[in-house]
Picture 1: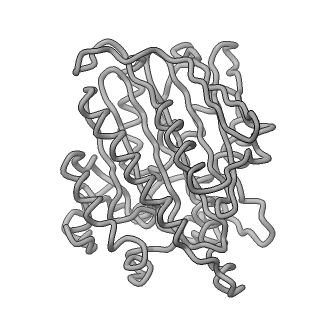
Picture 2: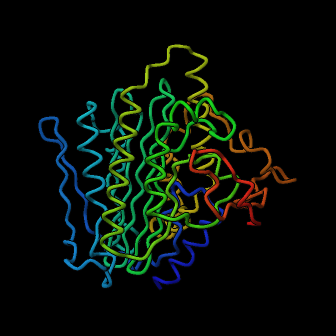
Length: 355
């Protein structure tokens, strides 16, 4: 059953929005057993306790996904953020902290915070002996045009499917000035890890606009060395993002703030509609709760005043009857190889193949 889950998950990457891809796998809810992630606030400090199994001492992990945990990634991010900003619980935390699936045993664990420059820092984690899942993202307030930090990790005893990126708020393919502003100095960082983590395969033209030249999109078999490298990449990417938000001046021009807000809403709208994780969430907690979790937690912000519908942002997906085309790709083209060169220049045409 795990193998069929991985196959479904991997195939979905050929045409999906990768940033929240981790829930695409067609898991049976009977596979999932909770290992609880609990968080408490004591005197304004965040103390996170993880109930998880210790890693096996051998370097190659063969027994189960449970021998490795992504909890330390979350722990690192929270601790590091606290060194840079006053991090407090988001209002979302009261409603979205944990959910029990319809099987009565599966737990979905959620955390959410905010800070003066951060609109929302949130994570969703699911973990058991068969798999490890992490969906972690940080969104800046619209007064700052910094990229969106994105980490989506899916691991089993046989494969890891990984996306790590600073998702650009504005299209780096069309807006060179934005790419130069935020990614020029980060290209060496991206090159460092692209050598360790080869390109993971097809990525659709539609999805590509939401990724940067330093994106890590990869698949690899389980090994402690690979996990150590991934943790290193996560920490370096997150420190880079924190440096960007620290240095970002607050925008005072109302038109620029509106532009940033609109760009984030477009990103969230794409993700909410095309997120392939809705299927597994629906299977775990039912359609109503799944829709609520996707819209109001994972992609929170869609109900902002002035927000538009999916077809307003992506009219090419309109069907003749006015409904939304459910296909992942309308263009029908994918990038089988990394579409940026060593200087961060887009060379996508060299790797385009049919989706």
